[in-house]
Length: 258
Ligand SMILES: [Zn+2]
Image 1 (cartoon, helix red, strand yellow):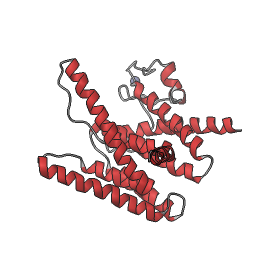
Image 2 (image 1 turned 180 degrees about the horizontal axis):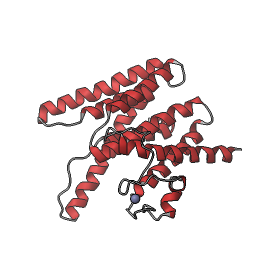
Image 3 (image 1 turned 90 degrees about the horizontal axis):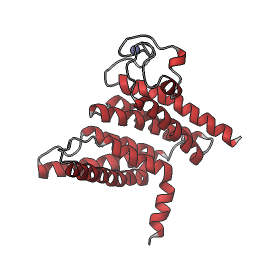
Image 4 (image 1 turned 120 degrees about the horizontal axis):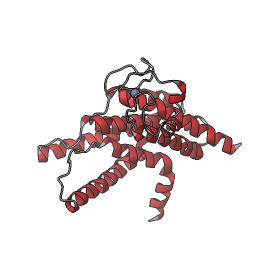
């Protein structure tokens, strides 16, 4: 029975991932996410059900459009697979209950926000607003982490990053962090509360610093200039994801140190 639920969650995740691909492509272009139905962006042919099976269609068609041969990025299949794996992991941790849906919604928002940020360097307000409304409603209905913890988490995370960013910008006279990143921290606080939100800030700084070191060392070795414009949204999402998947482990490890 357990394995049956695991398969159901994985497949559901993969199907949702396919829809998130549409959102990632269309939301920044201000296109409807429902109409027109999926079509090839090169030859405009409407895709048939057989072309739309997540992951499998991409493998069977060897990453090319069936009608015009245009290359289709592996990223579509990757996002479908990633969403499937994350749905499965969250089910494994939180089990078959409403808490799981709470975190699935949060992770789904993060996936869409992250890939739009990677492509366009923007964090769309509509997704932050939608996520925040869901988090507040769920917590009012008593299905999340508690409304007090949620609101305080949002104020503390969003507020502390706003103060920190303003200070850095005052000193270096350069934009340190986009407004979208601060809003994303505030939304993360709503979903994860005070301790989860603060842990996300800490982890995002570590992951971001690690990435920056890799990029700089790599560019030195290859004697190439690197692109210093890096979106910060993905690091916030990775931090939040680590918190969702292993917050209790991290806290017990940390308190065990003392
Ligand atoms: Zn085509």
